[in-house]
Amino acid sequence: MKSGRTIQAMAAEIRRQGEAKADYMVDTRCLRMEIWDNQPFLLALNESGHDLMEPMDIQATAHRQISTYLDIPIKYYEKMRQNDPELLAYNVNRWLQRIDPAQRMLRTLDGHARAFLSSRYRRIDNYDVAGIVTPVVGEMPDIQFGSCELTEDYMYLKVVNPRLQDEVRPGDVVQAGVSISNSETGRGAVSVCPFVYRLVCTNGMTATDSTASKMRRTHSGPRILTNRRFFVCAAEVLTDSDQDFVHNLQAAVREAMDEARFVQLLNQMRESTQLALNMDNLEEVVKRAAACVHITEAESVGILRHLHTDGDYTLYGLANAVTRYSQDVESYDRASKLEEIGYTVMTMAPELFRRINQVTGIAA
Image (tube, rainbow, N blue to C red):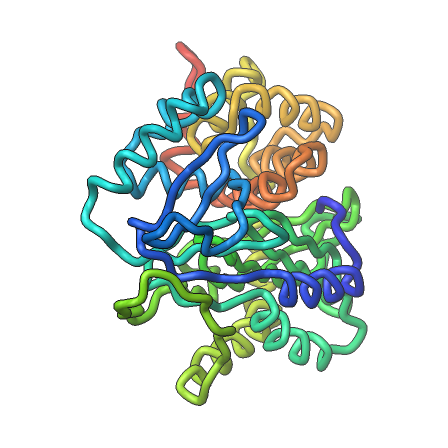
C-alpha cells in the first residue's frame, strides 16, 4: 500500500484543519469570479459591491462543482481556465446572474475555495469520523495503522490487524484490515470497507462490492433555509439523533476485521489463483481487463511490468499487479482507487474473465 502520514501527523493535521477551515452559505447572486495573475478567484459581494469574505483561489473540485452547477461542460470550462481565464470569468458571472437565485455552501480552507455544494450538504467532517473510529481501533490488541493520508478531497485510514492472518498459498501471507475514508468536499461518502494487506510485497486491497462494503453514509441532510444572502456556518456537531450513525460506524469497523469476513476474502483470493491468464497474448489480456475497470492504457503498461516481475500469471497475479502498481502513482487518491480496482479484477464474473482472456482464434 502507498505510504502516507503517521497517525500522529494525521491527527495533528486534522486538528489544524478543523481550526483553519470556514464554511459559508452564500446566495449565488453574491458570487463573482475575478482574474488576478491569470488565475480565477471567487468573491462574495454585498449589494453595495463590498467584499463579504477574502477572495479565494479555487481548487480543482470546486471548479468541477461550479461547472456542473452552471451546466458548463467541464471540457470547455477547463479549456477556458487554461487558455482564456477572462472568458471563463465572463461565462461564470453571466450565468450566476441569469440562473434562479439559490443558497450554496462554500467550503474553504487556508484561503482556498475547496467545495461548492448544495444547501442540503450534511457536514460529517474528518474530525468527527476519526473521533468515532479511533477508540474502536484502540480496543484491538497489536493493531497497526498501515497508511494514513489527507488529500485535498479525502481522508484515509488504513488499519491492519497482524493477529488475524493466513496464507493464500504457501509463503504468501495476508492480514485482515479495514479501510476508512471520508470526503469533506462532496467527492465521497463516509465509507468503511474490509482491507487485506499482503506481506510479500506490501500490497493493499480494498473490498468494495455490495457484500463487502459494511457501511456507507452520504453527506445529505435537510435543506438549509434562510433569507440571508451570506453567513458563516457554525461548526456542525453530532447530536443525539446521530447516535445510530455513530453506532453503525463503530460496528462496521469491527465487522470489517471479523474473522468470518477475512476467511471469505481469503477464499476469494485462493479461487482466483486457479484462473490462469492466456499467455498467447498477455499484453492484450491486460489491456482488455484494464479497459473494463477504468485503468488507463499508460497504467496498464506499468501493471504488465509488475505482472512479469512477479511471474504469477493468474487472475490473482493480475490483481496483485494492479495493487502493486498503485504504489508507483503520485496521487494517493488514485493509489487508493487502484487498491479497490485490484479487488474488482480479482472478483470479476467468470463470464467476463473468459471474454477478456480469449484471444482471437484461441479459446481460454
